[in-house]
Image (cartoon, rainbow, N blue to C red; front, side, top):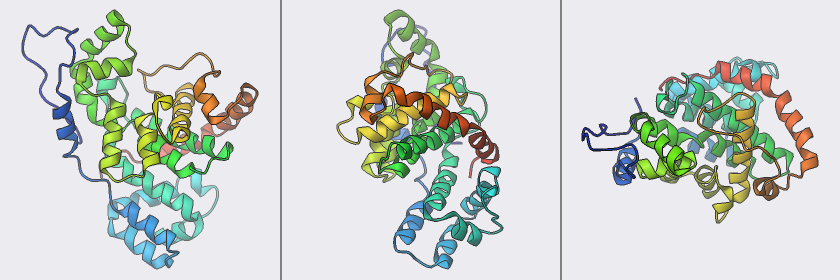
Length: 306
């Protein structure tokens, strides 16, 4: 089970309002012990760039049987099966095309880090995984519709934007009273209350993990600034795409309970992406029309440990 954490405090004098109840150094140290991101994705991407023969790509994926099984499961989902018949791993490689194949392998590799239950954030079983996949697919649509050249980076950052929550769940569950105290009594947003209480927030932890796993800078920034894209010094477009996708996924019902939607689309984040108010209705319709396909795909995705 991929959990980082330490035992909750036993000192009776510890009050919900005490700041930084945990040491961020301990949390980062524990996160360092997480298994590395599966190397199969980097090998597949390298082979695709080299236009390697299908058999070579197939051999790399087959080497990791758990990943291969998940790739085939996803390919057989209505989301992909309605487009083409895929009977084998080789069929998947040939029929899907480079971009979709890499996307599926990336998703299969990510599944191991999302446990069925992330109870610390008051999420039902599998909910964080559903939210992650929905956010990724919507971020892809956002980037593609706006003509951005970082579509796959937006997808990947959307997929892993809440990886920090997956590994911080134990601490959040143990210290929820303290986090809520910071929100209620001091008026802090959840992200700030999380950081004050735990010494690190899920956004910062996710950025650290993505950097450690060797993701490119645009993905690292997309994860590390998905709540506050304006603060990013570079790759604001990817962070903003994930921000928008995160909000839309929540509005469509692929939600994380402790997140809230802003009341208006007329904010600076939409301006970063060049989304004008007259574009919102059409964009929303485009994403909402794909909700059934997203639900179909999520319904087929495994979220158990690899």
